[in-house]
Image (tube, rainbow, N blue to C red; front, side, top):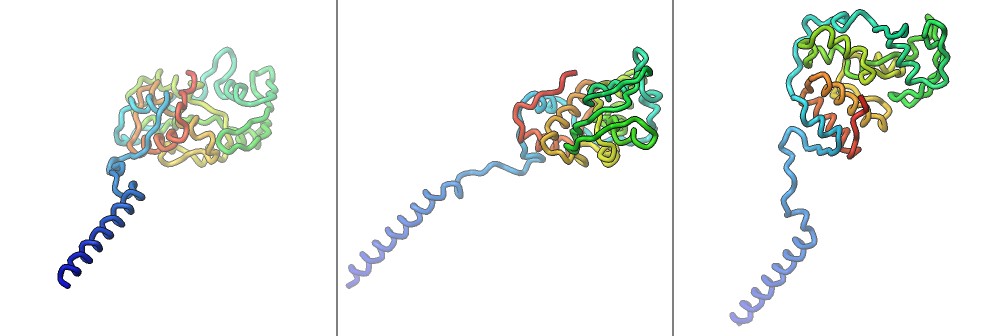
Length: 232
Protein backbone atom coordinates (compact mmCIF):
# COMPACT_ATOMS: atom_id res chain seq x y z
CA UNK A 1 0.00 0.00 0.00
CA UNK A 2 2.84 2.39 0.86
CA UNK A 3 4.43 1.79 -2.53
CA UNK A 4 1.13 2.52 -4.29
CA UNK A 5 0.91 5.93 -2.55
CA UNK A 6 4.50 6.72 -3.60
CA UNK A 7 3.70 5.91 -7.22
CA UNK A 8 0.58 8.08 -7.11
CA UNK A 9 2.55 11.05 -5.68
CA UNK A 10 5.21 10.61 -8.39
CA UNK A 11 2.60 10.54 -11.16
CA UNK A 12 0.91 13.66 -9.72
CA UNK A 13 4.23 15.51 -9.57
CA UNK A 14 4.96 14.61 -13.19
CA UNK A 15 1.55 15.89 -14.29
CA UNK A 16 1.97 19.17 -12.39
CA UNK A 17 5.44 19.68 -13.88
CA UNK A 18 4.11 19.05 -17.39
CA UNK A 19 1.23 21.54 -16.93
CA UNK A 20 3.60 24.26 -15.66
CA UNK A 21 6.04 23.66 -18.52
CA UNK A 22 3.29 23.88 -21.15
CA UNK A 23 1.93 27.09 -19.59
CA UNK A 24 5.32 28.77 -19.58
CA UNK A 25 6.02 27.73 -23.16
CA UNK A 26 2.66 29.04 -24.33
CA UNK A 27 3.19 32.39 -22.57
CA UNK A 28 6.84 32.96 -23.26
CA UNK A 29 6.33 36.70 -23.25
CA UNK A 30 5.52 36.53 -19.54
CA UNK A 31 8.96 35.31 -18.56
CA UNK A 32 11.21 36.67 -21.27
CA UNK A 33 13.06 39.86 -20.26
CA UNK A 34 11.14 43.03 -21.04
CA UNK A 35 12.61 46.33 -22.29
CA UNK A 36 13.58 48.64 -19.48
CA UNK A 37 11.38 51.69 -18.96
CA UNK A 38 13.50 53.20 -16.25
CA UNK A 39 15.17 55.72 -18.58
CA UNK A 40 13.96 59.27 -19.00
CA UNK A 41 12.52 58.46 -22.44
CA UNK A 42 11.50 55.08 -23.83
CA UNK A 43 10.70 56.54 -27.26
CA UNK A 44 12.82 55.59 -30.24
CA UNK A 45 12.94 57.34 -33.58
CA UNK A 46 15.05 57.19 -36.72
CA UNK A 47 15.69 59.44 -39.68
CA UNK A 48 17.36 62.76 -40.45
CA UNK A 49 15.25 64.78 -38.01
CA UNK A 50 15.82 62.32 -35.16
CA UNK A 51 19.56 62.27 -35.84
CA UNK A 52 19.68 66.08 -35.77
CA UNK A 53 17.74 66.08 -32.50
CA UNK A 54 20.31 63.70 -31.07
CA UNK A 55 23.10 66.25 -31.47
CA UNK A 56 21.24 69.16 -29.87
CA UNK A 57 22.35 70.03 -26.35
CA UNK A 58 19.87 69.23 -23.58
CA UNK A 59 19.72 71.87 -20.84
CA UNK A 60 17.27 73.57 -18.55
CA UNK A 61 15.43 76.70 -19.61
CA UNK A 62 17.41 79.88 -18.86
CA UNK A 63 15.68 82.84 -17.20
CA UNK A 64 13.57 85.05 -19.45
CA UNK A 65 15.28 88.11 -17.98
CA UNK A 66 16.01 90.76 -20.59
CA UNK A 67 13.74 89.34 -23.29
CA UNK A 68 11.77 91.66 -25.56
CA UNK A 69 10.78 91.40 -29.21
CA UNK A 70 13.21 94.18 -30.12
CA UNK A 71 16.09 91.85 -29.20
CA UNK A 72 15.36 90.14 -32.54
CA UNK A 73 15.20 93.27 -34.65
CA UNK A 74 12.74 96.09 -35.12
CA UNK A 75 9.87 94.27 -36.81
CA UNK A 76 10.01 92.60 -40.20
CA UNK A 77 13.10 93.06 -42.33
CA UNK A 78 12.63 94.47 -45.83
CA UNK A 79 14.26 93.02 -48.93
CA UNK A 80 13.82 94.42 -52.44
CA UNK A 81 10.90 96.56 -51.29
CA UNK A 82 9.03 93.61 -49.73
CA UNK A 83 8.89 92.84 -46.03
CA UNK A 84 9.30 89.36 -44.60
CA UNK A 85 5.63 88.98 -43.65
CA UNK A 86 4.42 89.49 -47.20
CA UNK A 87 7.17 87.30 -48.62
CA UNK A 88 6.00 84.42 -46.40
CA UNK A 89 2.33 85.08 -47.18
CA UNK A 90 3.14 84.90 -50.89
CA UNK A 91 5.11 81.68 -50.34
CA UNK A 92 2.49 79.88 -48.23
CA UNK A 93 -0.84 81.09 -49.62
CA UNK A 94 -2.40 80.05 -52.89
CA UNK A 95 -4.00 82.31 -55.50
CA UNK A 96 -2.39 85.38 -53.99
CA UNK A 97 -3.06 88.90 -55.20
CA UNK A 98 -0.22 91.38 -54.60
CA UNK A 99 -0.52 95.16 -54.89
CA UNK A 100 2.08 97.63 -56.14
CA UNK A 101 3.45 98.00 -52.58
CA UNK A 102 4.39 94.30 -52.49
CA UNK A 103 1.56 93.56 -50.06
CA UNK A 104 -0.49 90.38 -50.33
CA UNK A 105 -4.08 91.61 -50.43
CA UNK A 106 -5.82 88.24 -50.72
CA UNK A 107 -5.22 84.54 -51.01
CA UNK A 108 -6.12 81.14 -49.62
CA UNK A 109 -4.27 79.30 -46.85
CA UNK A 110 -4.39 75.56 -46.29
CA UNK A 111 -3.51 75.97 -42.63
CA UNK A 112 -0.95 73.43 -41.41
CA UNK A 113 -1.87 73.85 -37.73
CA UNK A 114 -5.61 73.21 -37.96
CA UNK A 115 -6.09 71.70 -41.45
CA UNK A 116 -8.68 74.43 -42.16
CA UNK A 117 -8.83 76.40 -45.39
CA UNK A 118 -8.76 80.13 -44.64
CA UNK A 119 -9.74 82.84 -47.11
CA UNK A 120 -7.35 85.71 -46.46
CA UNK A 121 -8.19 89.35 -47.14
CA UNK A 122 -5.90 92.18 -46.12
CA UNK A 123 -7.63 94.69 -43.85
CA UNK A 124 -7.73 96.18 -40.36
CA UNK A 125 -10.20 93.59 -39.10
CA UNK A 126 -9.13 90.61 -41.24
CA UNK A 127 -5.33 90.54 -41.61
CA UNK A 128 -4.91 88.82 -38.24
CA UNK A 129 -6.88 85.81 -39.49
CA UNK A 130 -3.57 84.63 -40.93
CA UNK A 131 -0.43 85.28 -38.90
CA UNK A 132 3.24 84.51 -39.43
CA UNK A 133 4.40 82.14 -36.72
CA UNK A 134 7.97 81.90 -35.48
CA UNK A 135 8.03 78.10 -35.31
CA UNK A 136 10.57 78.33 -32.51
CA UNK A 137 8.95 81.07 -30.45
CA UNK A 138 11.36 83.97 -30.00
CA UNK A 139 10.91 83.90 -26.24
CA UNK A 140 11.71 80.19 -26.23
CA UNK A 141 14.75 80.82 -28.43
CA UNK A 142 15.91 83.55 -26.03
CA UNK A 143 15.78 81.17 -23.07
CA UNK A 144 17.58 78.40 -24.96
CA UNK A 145 20.65 80.08 -26.32
CA UNK A 146 19.63 83.03 -28.50
CA UNK A 147 20.57 85.58 -25.84
CA UNK A 148 24.16 84.49 -26.48
CA UNK A 149 23.89 85.31 -30.20
CA UNK A 150 24.78 88.66 -31.71
CA UNK A 151 21.96 91.11 -32.42
CA UNK A 152 22.52 90.60 -36.15
CA UNK A 153 22.22 86.82 -35.82
CA UNK A 154 19.03 87.13 -33.77
CA UNK A 155 17.49 89.40 -36.41
CA UNK A 156 18.46 86.82 -39.04
CA UNK A 157 16.72 84.11 -37.01
CA UNK A 158 13.52 86.17 -36.67
CA UNK A 159 13.34 86.69 -40.45
CA UNK A 160 14.58 83.29 -41.62
CA UNK A 161 12.03 81.56 -43.91
CA UNK A 162 13.00 78.28 -42.23
CA UNK A 163 11.66 79.69 -38.97
CA UNK A 164 8.44 81.14 -40.39
CA UNK A 165 5.04 79.73 -41.38
CA UNK A 166 1.78 81.40 -42.33
CA UNK A 167 -0.83 79.88 -40.01
CA UNK A 168 -4.27 80.30 -38.48
CA UNK A 169 -4.22 83.40 -36.25
CA UNK A 170 -6.08 81.94 -33.24
CA UNK A 171 -3.89 78.82 -33.28
CA UNK A 172 -0.79 81.00 -33.28
CA UNK A 173 -2.14 82.96 -30.31
CA UNK A 174 -2.90 79.74 -28.47
CA UNK A 175 0.65 78.52 -29.00
CA UNK A 176 2.09 81.79 -27.67
CA UNK A 177 5.71 81.12 -26.61
CA UNK A 178 5.26 77.39 -26.02
CA UNK A 179 7.75 74.75 -27.06
CA UNK A 180 6.96 71.21 -28.25
CA UNK A 181 6.54 70.02 -24.66
CA UNK A 182 3.66 72.45 -24.05
CA UNK A 183 2.04 72.90 -27.48
CA UNK A 184 1.63 70.89 -30.68
CA UNK A 185 -0.61 71.61 -33.69
CA UNK A 186 -4.13 70.20 -33.49
CA UNK A 187 -3.54 68.83 -37.00
CA UNK A 188 -1.77 65.60 -35.98
CA UNK A 189 -0.51 64.63 -39.48
CA UNK A 190 1.53 67.85 -39.50
CA UNK A 191 3.24 67.28 -36.15
CA UNK A 192 6.21 65.40 -37.59
CA UNK A 193 6.97 68.25 -39.99
CA UNK A 194 6.42 70.77 -37.20
CA UNK A 195 8.95 69.31 -34.77
CA UNK A 196 11.38 68.64 -37.65
CA UNK A 197 11.27 72.34 -38.50
CA UNK A 198 11.88 73.29 -34.88
CA UNK A 199 14.85 70.93 -34.76
CA UNK A 200 16.24 72.39 -37.99
CA UNK A 201 16.00 75.94 -36.62
CA UNK A 202 17.60 75.02 -33.30
CA UNK A 203 20.39 73.16 -35.07
CA UNK A 204 21.07 76.06 -37.45
CA UNK A 205 21.27 78.64 -34.67
CA UNK A 206 22.92 76.53 -31.97
CA UNK A 207 19.93 76.51 -29.61
CA UNK A 208 19.23 73.77 -27.11
CA UNK A 209 16.18 71.76 -25.98
CA UNK A 210 14.92 70.80 -22.54
CA UNK A 211 14.57 67.13 -21.62
CA UNK A 212 10.77 67.38 -21.67
CA UNK A 213 10.92 69.01 -25.10
CA UNK A 214 13.23 66.31 -26.45
CA UNK A 215 11.04 63.53 -25.06
CA UNK A 216 7.99 65.00 -26.81
CA UNK A 217 9.87 65.38 -30.09
CA UNK A 218 11.03 61.77 -29.92
CA UNK A 219 7.49 60.62 -29.26
CA UNK A 220 6.23 62.52 -32.29
CA UNK A 221 9.06 61.33 -34.56
CA UNK A 222 8.63 57.71 -33.47
CA UNK A 223 5.50 57.48 -35.65
CA UNK A 224 7.20 58.90 -38.77
CA UNK A 225 10.51 57.06 -39.29
CA UNK A 226 12.66 58.68 -41.91
CA UNK A 227 11.35 62.21 -41.27
CA UNK A 228 13.59 64.66 -43.09
CA UNK A 229 14.59 68.14 -42.00
CA UNK A 230 13.01 70.93 -44.05
CA UNK A 231 15.30 72.51 -46.61
CA UNK A 232 17.05 75.58 -45.31
